[in-house]
Image (tube, rainbow, N blue to C red; front, side, top):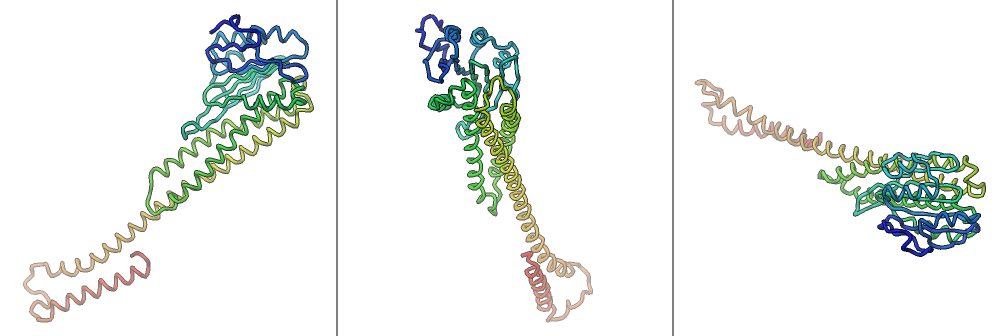
Length: 339
């Protein structure tokens, strides 16, 4: 880790790319500028100021540094370092610790990540792990709303949660469009193993996505109704809006899972129906072959006295009888649509 003392007071500590941003704000929501990690305590000595820190897969020493600056709880810091936590919201005294699952399409595949959020009255720290977009757009959007940034880090928390949830809507929309593209293969007469495999992969990804989104309903509901010391009443409608977005994403995922399950069942039913049709045709042709085989097998027996053997019209008669039987069977099979 690069020492913070080698940078100016308005420059963030690179920390090998683990520190994405470290920005100080005044009490009126205006931006002071980038600060180093060592300068955080100096900024917080000024009344009304707060700091927004963004980290990407930090190591233990960096988290310990932030723990010293913000007096973070040991268990929360441990969870942030290990990652792979369930989606949750935990209160530690006058601060909150949130774990939120994130999703991102990487090289055409759905990848999942995790964001831990330390939230206090004068700080907001986001820790990203795995597949996750940068929260720089959310921060810029918050900075443009000067009146709302007066509420401090709570508005930044809203911006981050809203950014995470809104990025999940296009993912569900892409799944719906891909399902429409697969409909031609689903209803095709020929069976494609790759189609069923893709439908299964989509359903698996949506199930994992639902597990990531569903707990957010409880978290946002808590932020709407609880923690008055951290969430001003003016911002509760904004967190309620995030709750509505989470609910809509969750409902869309549930609908898509049902559609995918139906598509898989329809595809397998059509395959089974096609196989039955083939078996019916094979059985029909077998019946056509069975009739002449049965009749002619009688004349293959080496008995001395056989009917019509000494009659000159016997052979043509047998041919006519065989043709008549076969024609009758064929007509009946066509009528019942087996051929």
